Image 1 (tube, rainbow, N blue to C red):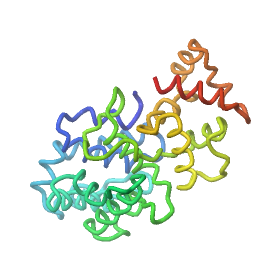
Image 2 (image 1 turned 30 degrees about the vertical axis):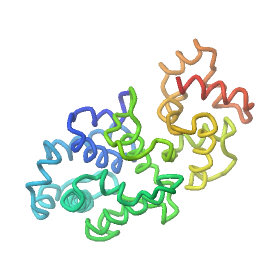
Image 3 (image 1 turned 180 degrees about the vertical axis):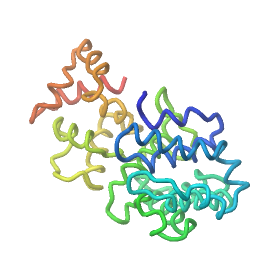
Length: 267
């Protein structure tokens, strides 16, 4: 798994701490992975047990603690606003999961409506959309919401990779966290012909995965994004008859090749 921000969630046994640590890690997941890990650990190291810290700390104490924090475009004021929003969410809803599922409708065919409501409520509780602009994106803004969809993958799926502390959301509703790696690979294996990694593209790629696994379309994300960038995984894939680099570099890949690749990754 290393290096990946997801690894930080396994530092916590309590699901309430995992969901807070996960949101912080996901929101800071832009830039170089080493910097992401360092910044996330800097924040979480000051919190100790996130649930306990936020329960006992006043907003002004949080702002003072992170006044000098900086992660690329994210300021100490922004991370503090997010933490205050999380604190108030716990006070009003009991957990981030409850805040999220409060906006989840029975007829929803994806998590996007609930995600939009989740972001809106967090923004409101944090002091307004501008208080943590670099951290919280919304489907209502047309964003692919890569970082928050990554967070939801961590929270909802449960396997050897994702801890899945949330039980109230179906993995079938998840949307792929579309980063540049997945966007490029998805185009090469025929899952999309779109030219921008936006929300429409994320939905198209998700539907492509759902044709193979409708109850868990995002299961391919972790493996697929590492297939071309992690040499160890590439070597294993080639021993299993899948030439990862060749598949990624080919401008046209047959449906049979794509299905073979995804079938192997989904094992």
